[in-house]
Image 1 (cartoon, rainbow, N blue to C red):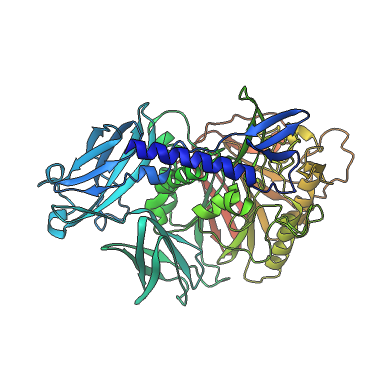
Image 2 (cartoon, helix red, strand yellow):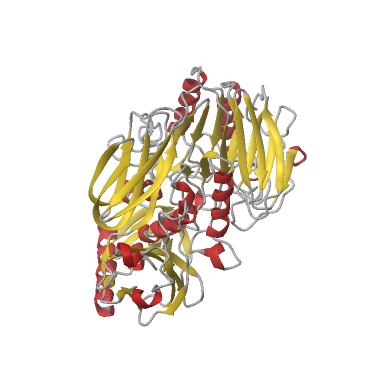
Length: 625
């Protein structure tokens, strides 16, 4: 088996090398070419070649290729070294079913033989598998250093011999919730047909591994039991549709960001994600009757070169909040740690450039994000193609905005989700050789879409309040003063397209962005940001200093106050407060883990911030009376 895996590995490497030689470099980049060795970045006479994209782990490998036996199941994880912890999952017996881990085994040459008859005999059969002749067990893989790499699930039918059948390895999730519709989606380990049972209807999903089922013609503000069927199995939960737009009934929503894996071991570092604190974030939101959770970036450690590894880290994040996502939507946006790209290095391993991966429609960070999540689709914003700086109007030179820039409505509230790490080139701020997008910068087409969307929501009589959210703070306070929308006050920082810097610098663009929110809107309550691993609140008024000394450009007219609420405190390593021009106007700064709960009651909006680890209140304020 290992020989087969190794041969497959060599085939993938050679295929990647061939693809690198033949791939067309988007004209939006500069100094990137290819030769017989693959993609390279030219810096004078020196060539820096793209690192070969080989995943350390993939979901397919960690599914374990289960094979039923007379007594249980054999799992084969290839060359994975470590141990497996496992236990039954009580679907149908608990509202938030999780594995009840009981046994641990060391993998032998990547394999584990699980004896179901022995391990889960009477009185340990609390899911009644012997009677039902079917069961699910969850398993946790730790590598040889003790890091949790993956939480998986195996589904079996029979009571000896056993047969491995399709497992739902993530989901079901509720998304794209409106007053009359919802989408339920989930993924299975192997292809199967599926069904959604809801409102006395059965909606079929064709055979496949990704199932995305939309139900319409529901009633506003109604609780619906739903059941998903896949193969011989079913899972049952419920969802509640949004109220009629503009009904102005009281509701709660939650906000946080930045949950990439941290120090401390255990579930704080389930390869890529801080599952420990995210599970608590979701539990606090659910127990406080949140109707949805907004999460704006840096859910994973990221900065990867393969989609396989990116999807594994996304799955680890999704699994952390899955027990609550069955019932309420999690709306997610992109951050800088969602980066997926080509990294260019010399023979000594020194990096010279990191750009968003291409081809954009299949390989970019944006494409990987769209593959992992189900978000609303905007109809008028496609990409930065067609902008004034597009180097070729007939070619695709930028990644898609599909499912990473959007807006949604719940009752009298609208939330606009932006991507301030679009076409992100992590190396650009220190080296513009490659061209690429700048961390914190909202590019022209996205800004025009924002302006149009805000105008439409201003004219909508059902909407009283708007929150805009993106990963990067407008005014950093601790940890990111050298970038975000500030860059230590250096307006020269900006994206570079085809070797040419854009006309507007980061501070000019920041002010254009704020002008839309402040002077072209009366409904925008504030901006929800992350990136900095802390919680803080800033009320922007005309008294707040927001410019470097001797700033030569036109300055923003702050005609009314809005809030910046930064919550990047979902488990990533903390950042302490820095001294910046607006520091004395920054309130309630905390490095505790935090979830923001927003209470919307007609014209009133208030907020309570809770530490989900200890349940103490960090901050509490009325944002709009």
